Length: 315
Image (cartoon, rainbow, N blue to C red):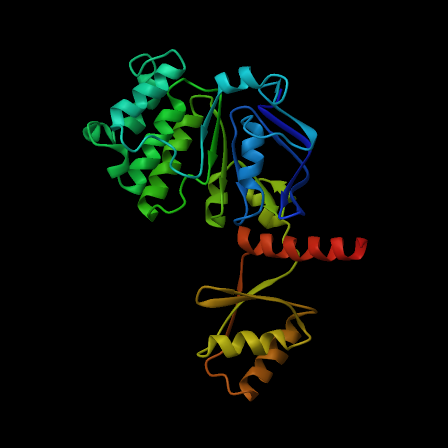
């Protein structure tokens, strides 16, 4: 039995008399004990899907289950079995760290002492601030407190909605280390994130954009499907380089990535040499082409373009 099963889930909202489709026939399976990533930008549908799975929202159609329990018929049982950490800090800012944790333990008829072994690796990092009000904690400490509260009743499935958004790089790494340790205790974890680099930290990922699943696979499986040779291209004038590259008919795709542009070409490497010569003629200095391996974000962009073309051809 899978820990989470989602079958053809569709969800729409009405915004100023306009119907907006947030999820479009989404189907996903998460295995027991898996650390599964839901990867996509803001507005992709990640939060809506997690709210449906945690019984906080009803889908328009489709089915979903958690630990074999239907999210509609068995919502009371699901709420006993899952932990949920929403994207926004949702604890009580006027209560202390200890008071928040005690309150959430009481809601599930348990105590901090009873399940301390489960949260100790996390709580030990904030325990010295246990008398400080939650609202006065740093972003990273707030996330650790929220995770402790989501775990205090020993859930079998943990849902985390963008838990590392807005925290520093060190806190992000520490948080993912904590998730790996929790996974060793046979807790299934479904985490959403807009950060493509975090995809590599998951066992498997679902790439989602505009309410559609683009692909589901291991991080390595996703990148191995990249269908072109990928090049990094740099020059002294990066903006002009981007514009000039996009004008070349031999260029299949071109996206800015930090201090370089990631480019794929139609045809073979002879087109790379041809375009390099054209760029030099246009006044570009120190143009550098380098073959690179595709990352998750490169694959996401390729899938997004191909899915858009598929949808356009259908209509």
